[in-house]
Figure 1 (cartoon, helix red, strand yellow):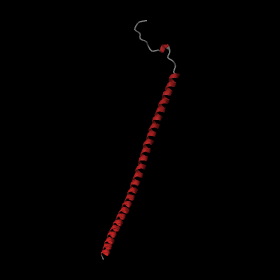
Figure 2: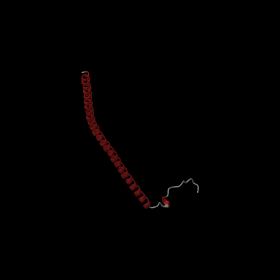
Figure 3: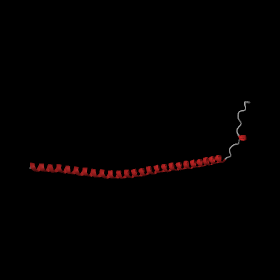
Figure 4: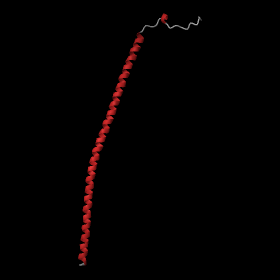
Length: 109
């Protein structure tokens, strides 16, 4: 009878261990499911943020390009004005001696 009692006690202990295994396995699956849901959420947020950062950077670079084009347009206009001024100055008649600026007349010759 002592053997049966030991066997019954052992069966009870084994049953408790099996219940612990089932509980632990259930906890692991719940954690896995929660982790998957969390990673899906984080993955979506990460993807959205990364796309947002990309769009912001593209907008900054587009603005930089527009500013460069605007400066280039202004520079080209200034260059054209300078070229026109140089052309006009080259084509202007040279000043004759009668039109030379007055020199210092201190009375000395």
